[in-house]
Image 1 (cartoon, rainbow, N blue to C red):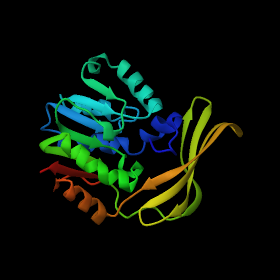
Image 2: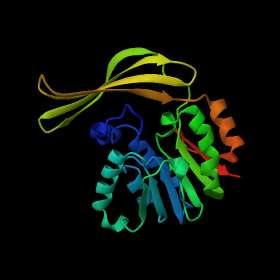
Image 3: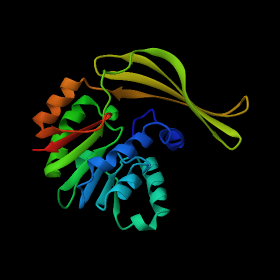
Amino acid sequence: MADYISPVFYDLLAVHSHVPGVREKLPSLLAGVRRSVLEVGAGTGLITTSLAECTPAEIFALEPSATMRAILLSRLAERPDLLARVTVLPCDAMGLDLDEPVEAMVMINVLYALEPGYRRRLWPVLADRLEPGGLLVLTWRDGGPPKPRPMRHLDSRRVGRHTYTVSSEITESDDERATCRYLYRITRGDEVLSEEELVGHAYRPAWEVLRDELVSAGYVRAAAPDGLLAWRRA
């Protein structure tokens, strides 16, 4: 989990941002997958349940954050039909230990959280756990990291009598990394009930950098809808 994400706010905001588009686009990419899918960075399970609905495969949901993992398990507890089909892995991706290679891997909004050195080491590790011809799918946004900008409102959601609001600023930016400051606030009318400030880094490599890393690790690019990248292990 990126260190500027608040688990309290995550689902409230994600279900209105990237999640609907990803849920719409994944089924066509995974249409031929029947045996197994690894989800790297499963978070709270918003995509995990969608994977289970669009494929009959066994799902391995990897999530190192205990807080996010707890929400994921709570979501699965409400779906008895999935309890026998979804295995939650509490490890870091580098320590991934599977009985056999999987047919497909999915990484949704994970790339931005990977420090460059870690990311370069990760691709070969994932390739080793993906069967030949297996599919790697990840979300992608071109253009490099955002430029520095002042604090601005991003989104708000009303829950009962309270309003959950997130704002952010970009304090620094270079070729790949941006330093982000997020402010999470819960209010009742004009009264501030809670305020949390989190600062962390987001990474957005240039296309040429990402392409070369994946090719060097043994992946071949495949067709994918806008906003997603698909690669197959050679």
